[in-house]
Length: 224
Image 1: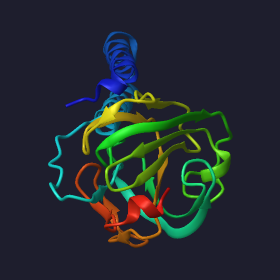
Image 2: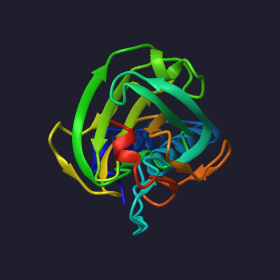
Image 3: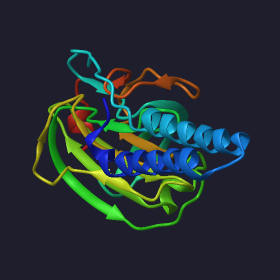
């Protein structure tokens, strides 16, 4: 299935590929050049098909769990001061998405969207630490019954488009789709210090399926 967040780019790429193939068959000689153009068009279409795929996922039904919002690889797990939503120290889990990962993002916990902010920024490589502060990003804070979770959709070196359909006050359910980042990117997740984290640097994650950690019983009180 192709994600609805990428219909515009996917169908544009598909149209370009079709035009290239038609032109190659109708006007290009010799055959070697013709088949070369057709090969490039086919590879471009396959890349778009892979990048904008949107597979179904089964979200774990575990009370108090924090589920990964992104496919990719964990590149950082550390304690930082989070000034925007927690206003205190929190655990940051950073997930890097390569161009070959599924780029549809999913809700990490059920609750209410309590904070949103879009930040225009620069385009450092998404795996670099400074990307979390300097790059274009969409910031979303969710209040759940167990505690707070903050997400940052961060554009990478190639990405120039963040899609997020969440608005402040919206009720959300863990595992549901809410947007994507196009062409290589990163998602930072901030959770309370008392959270038991299950992932480490190098862990591969799947959006809506991989459990990043679990709230402590009293984490809501401690995250205020």
